[in-house]
Length: 93
Length: 315
Image (cartoon, rainbow over all chains, first blue to last red; front, top):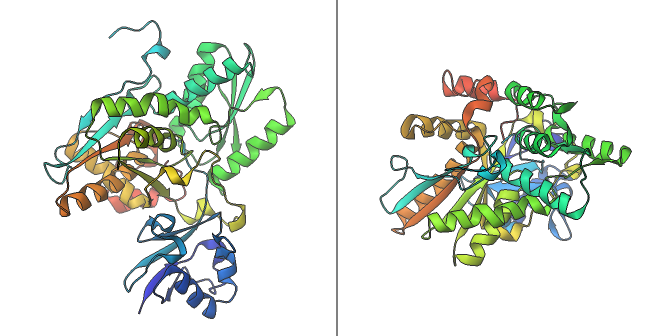
């Protein structure tokens, strides 16, 4: 099973500089646990006791997982998961 | 139509069908043309409401100075309102935003303080907050947390959409300060059962996200996740592609965040069409393409334009 996980610059020290890694799981939670088993410490940067950390955004096929079930969101082979830090938006337009 | 002054002409913008882009006769896209506002962007609504509320509260008095973190449109809108109402304006913006916006601000008499490009809008907000703390007589209306921003849309944009498109099924807009989506979204959800409120969030390149600690991110104080029904992350290349499609297929010259909103809107409309459901999807056209010409977004191939856009803020 292969799910592509895109890693933001700030977390690439956990993946030896890799921008993108593969992982497997049936849910986002499982996927993160799988990632953590190979890139130790990553889970703690993404998740805290209340779920996904406040300033971390995770997108499943470009859609914010918070609207797809959060950590319980189902994931499958061929999906792409993108992790990004929350930024101020707005402006210029 | 006749108005007593420029500010009175605010809002009541056209809602224009997009027959060539709409996926099916029963899955239609409708563009709300916010470039038809006094300074040419949706931000005129927020700027007017924030200033009016601050005047009502007594926070703003004639001759006062406004300070705002803005990489462009809010600054331009505030500059216009400040000029007409007699206030000074200082804008804090990242140094990598387009040349046209800087020029417009200076033409309106605003003073600009630049924040570093790396770190983008987060850094501009940080710098502005620091300055506000140092200068208690500067009024920071703070578009990211000022409820009057969202209120402008609750009271004007939402009702206009409902009046023009009572059969509305989706409202799609770019997500920045979140004011447009929060205000319009709340109004529509109160009045249209089952309406979908969809956010299109720009996905920038690494330079903008920079090496900032992931724990130091920023979520606008206005943001209330429960108002949205979905949120999409849209890449520069997709936003650019759709912006060009708007021009090529519908003759509509829009800014890049409009392309991002269209990308999400098309996904919604296509999903409905595939399921045999009707859809009337209103898409926010926040501004025209004028302020993005110098980014090179409209010339050359899509790949060339995407490369030029790298590192620049486009929404």
